[in-house]
Image (cartoon, rainbow over all chains, first blue to last red; front, side, top):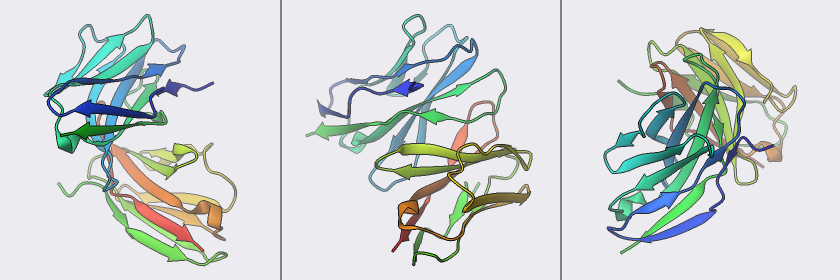
Length: 116
Length: 112
């Protein structure tokens, strides 16, 4: 079974609008971390935001916020005020377990295109 | 902070040749990961180390792949012999803080 599912292969958004990228996860471990990464066409992996399973509040980092719905096992990324430079592949990832280290399991990614 | 340094950035080799990919982690980062990215399979974990010790190598495709971390400042991923299906982007990532993973720029490997 897929541990991380990103159901949107591609998304389009108009510049300055908000967009939500979906991510659902599957784990039986009560302790886990959820991550979002951005991969522009240049290929590097850029860390965006992190949410711990015990965090009471949704994580926010500038224009990025994570809509964490634990009961539904979803961790959607919300990008507000989209910019042309946001066009990229976006990956959701999960680390299971209570240790501070461990492997990340990635979803298949969503390609976001921002239109002017 | 120079980040995670991978070399080479690009590698083109002939089938059957040995390929060695290199990674220099961020100083003080205790965990090191090797990932492979392909269009078909996405990002797959090959192996990871914690404090230079291999923790999980279940993602290593077969015996042709081997990885070492002889010290805290260097790791290698070796493919011998290489095959066309090994063509991919190979990322090294390290983790030091509670939840921060930093990726290198990747090595684009093409086996012809």
